[in-house]
Every structure is written in structure tokens, then in C-alpha cells.
Amino acid sequence: MLKFGFDNETKVKVAGAAFFKKYLDRLYEVMRKDIDRKLFKRDGQVDLVLVGDRKIRAMNKEFRKKDKATDVISFAYLEVTDYEREPGDIIVGDIFISVDTAKRQAVEKGHDLKKEMAILFVHGLLHCMGFDHNTDEEEVVMEGWAEKVLKA
Image 1 (cartoon, one colour):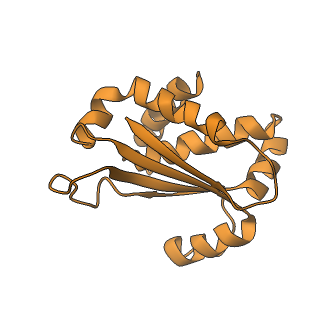
Image 2: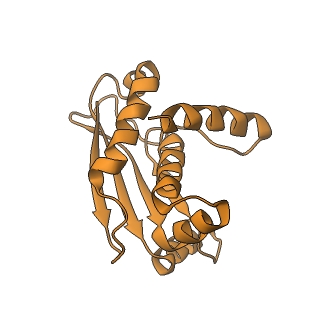
């Protein structure tokens, strides 16, 4: 099972925890075997924080050495921490989404903010599960999983 933490540090009322939790549940539904294996059949914790461009830009500069705002930053912990011997829940990852950037992208793509937030959250979740898009092949795989999860 995947547990969910949510914090909105912005003044924008986008969607509440329940909106995002349904996509986390859907991810678990479509990837249950892989997730259970990675979690050693224990519970995992995923946290989402909604921020503005100023904060995400600072994070992007500090952690990725890119001095610009971005839409989503994920910190995936499954691949870098040895949880096998530690008791308790496993921290899967932290996801930060810039509401400011998501608003601009929603307009550019011609859909509403909630849809853009769902897309960005699922993208972040997949990074937390170990997926990446450094090659065309990786991108195709990641996009395939994203489509399955977003059909929730």
C-alpha cells in the first residue's frame, strides 16, 4: 500500500489531497507487483508539495544546477536507500510541483489546471518508482505507464 502526504504552500486552491491520492492508488493498482517487490511488501510513503516558481527555481538550481523554474521535481529514494533491513514504512519519494508553471503549461496545452496537475503528479510518481526519460526508449516506457495511470 502507498500512503500519501500532501501540502499546498501556495495560495492557489488547485485540488485537495483526495484528487492526487486517486492517481497514487491507480499507480499502485497497475504496478502492484513491481511496487510490492520494491517495498519488500511493506507500506510506502509518497509526499507531494505544491509550490510556486520561486521555490522550485531555487530547488532546481540547488539540486539540478539549472537556474530556472521547472514544472516538477521528484526525489526518489527507493534506488538510493537500503530499506531492506530498516523497520517501518518505506519513504518512496517527495514530489514538488510548481503551480505557477503548471498554470502556464495548462494554457499552452489547451486543458485545465487539474489535468495538468494530474499529468505532473503521475510523472513525478513514475520518477519515484525508478523510471526516467533520458533515452527515447525510456521515454516510451514511461509514457506508456503514465497513460495507464491517468486513465483513472
